[in-house]
Length: 166
Image 1 (tube, rainbow, N blue to C red):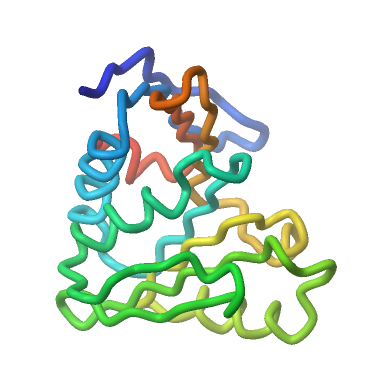
Image 2: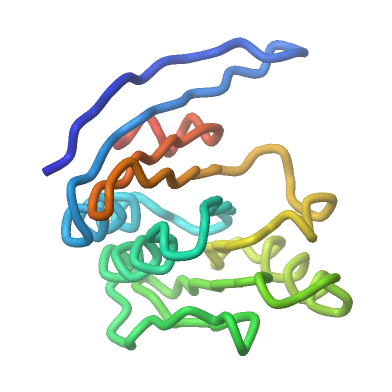
């Protein structure tokens, strides 16, 4: 089950409008289902930042997005490999980064920047704080909170074109 807490628009400096949404999902299956819905509306060139503690459901979310992108491969956390690239529907690609184990991004920052420039690639970043300067302002950020052992509260901000479709 998914509960929508609120959805709204906020004006930001220079006339930019930020759309935000707060939802609560009751378990892993609901997390994957919501992420799959997001995956279905992705068209390429989207940049999605996932923020949350270890075990908050970020990789589960990416697995659901992969289903929405018709990815047949088993999506795993790239904690040790830093990034994984998957072929998706309609000639799209999913680039999944996890910078948890790095003190600095180094050359991976260049790889990330290259993928973010590709119009056929959806880029998802976990633990993005070390590449904050590389990320564009126009991105979707999803914050994961864990009110209980199974429920997750997701706060989505930015990318009004994506949030409006959910």
